Image (cartoon, rainbow, N blue to C red; front, side, top):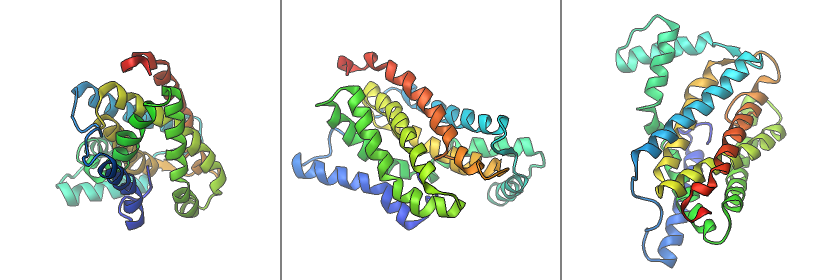
Length: 259
């Protein structure tokens, strides 16, 4: 999560969990084993990538269909056309082809821009989730890790995102809270099922780059409620993530040792 991966303060925030996990591991184990370094089976990475894309797509399509925001932002398309021509030599006139090109680049090269997800996930799902599940049930692990992850982002929402959008931070804090628990449930499931941290990393990065790099830009503000419903800390993503999170929570019996 986060709203501007180029900002120095956000970069530090994203990699603080990694640093904390490394320090803890080295202090108590004298090594960095147990963080889920192995790549594992490719189907989990592919599923995580596709699911993150789907959650973003469904949440924003609902925003547009229900009229909470407009589709599509012509200024964003013009900016994307300029960027594609300048960076890749791609001259595209059709808005629909521009959208497809941006989505394709976001889902591939764009993941390298969203690399902050590596810093967060090596801490949250690489270290924290496996440690919690040693002592608690899967439900408790998802709840504890989700609450910690959500609250960790509150200063970002309160001091950076809400002022930038010119909205009250309090609804966004509430929406991000239950979205964080739901998304943490999904990533915890992938982490424990695959034995690898990389599905969680890919899920996190894909969710970030699609929300920040495409769907938020494509959405036109139509009323005061738009920024409360759309976006990665908006109500709609929280609702969609909760639905998917519940489905993954129901699948916890499939996990090793049925956590």
